[in-house]
Image (cartoon, rainbow, N blue to C red):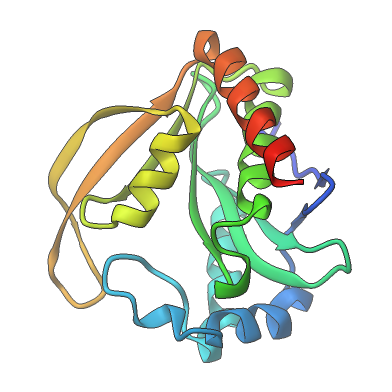
Length: 196
């Protein structure tokens, strides 16, 4: 049986809906806002490549290594993507990653709530032994956001992979463990209350 199964996660500010091709138009518009695909330290698909990226993620879902979502605002508009990836069903580990949001919703309560929902599902429903986050060592914005969640730096994988332009990427690896989740959850709930 596939683990984890697709699910819709709904909050006050966002809904995580299983990714489908019908999200393409909204996501192309989201990628175009602020020319997100031009950032060298992260991978956001070009607006013209959104349908191809959705297909790629859905193929990874079919082989059991990824569970992708579209990030929707309360009005149902898709403003980004996120996933459980590098899924290990034997040891019950997932990585939250391949996440991006349109510029207008970055650094808002939407990201905080999405991470809250993904972490709660991983620890409270899926009984994960760890949830990982990985990012380019040079992506300060992403690293700061991961650290603000309460994740701990496990280490840096040097020359871990090549970026789209062929440069070598050092990858910072973070994780949250089950015994840390109550404190992380409390911190996220506090941030969400502050942002209301």
